[in-house]
Length: 436
Image (tube, rainbow, N blue to C red; front, side, top):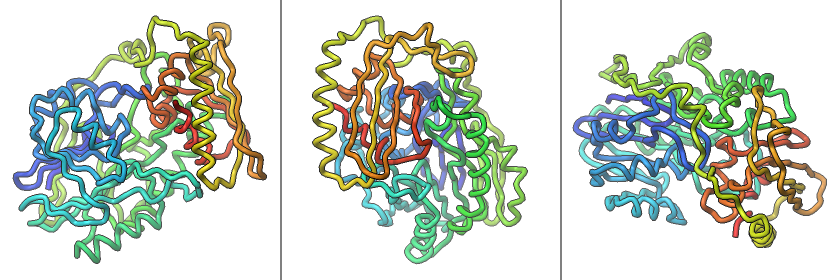
């Protein structure tokens, strides 16, 4: 078993004659402001050189399901492995790209792919990894267990799946009882691959970044113990913000390997595979190989990137008003179906062209507000408020479903203020229903 980690959750596995790629993403995204790092060029070329038999897509988010890259591949014969979702949005989008060999696997089922490997898909069981209850749940993320049929070695790839420690213990038990084995190596997302804290204006972002990094480091041992895994490497949460929000990069809660290396993990061992390095599992040995990938863009190119929604055409504000009213009706109608314990009010400050200064604050002298929309969801004891700052063109794309709310929120397209500064998953999740 050979595992190569290129960037973010883009992994390449070789097991026997099988070449399996996980979540290939290279370059800039459509649905948010992210750019893959450190590899951010020639994604199609890299994939065509690998020429995988199988491609696993964990979920719909654009840093995992890179439409641009997959569409550019000439060879569409690879088998695409996905979870069998109740609503086949991911499957339908893959079919539109020209792939016809789609293998849908029911969660918690062991599927023998070929003589080399068997896999099992782990579904999302929590809507956040902090064990905070939420009434609005999404069938979105997945993880994958990959077993070598010959060596019996197992790799667990958690991806972005928000698994708490009890969820991870369930994975360990499943592998022990159903697969008659244990995890030899795993990949975990360490840090916060989200909008917090870089996109929050009314907090000390540097302090919050350090807090999140420290908590993530402290939790590594607990997560590995829950999985029963000794060897691991970090993946996911590795990106840079390009374009006009470039100055937010300094606040991203990315955990560098040096900090992991300095931990006194004792019985656990971390590999640094970031940027195209490879680990080879050979009997009871691990062999490391250096990276052969050198596909980088310049800092100035990062700064000058344009977001997908940015255009010279101004949105008709009266049309936007109409779209918002229709979307709000759908929002309220959908939320009435849930039993949500909390309540909130939301303000949307809409800008002609929102600009940030060098410290990542809104440059009010150069940012013109063109609309303010207000709405709320009932009144109960657990009440909170959220202010969103976003561009006019972006809101138009969100209301009309050209850009989904979920990746736009987590992908640093929107600036936030919330009071109190507490995470209420239902509030954020509810925005997905603000569409026509």
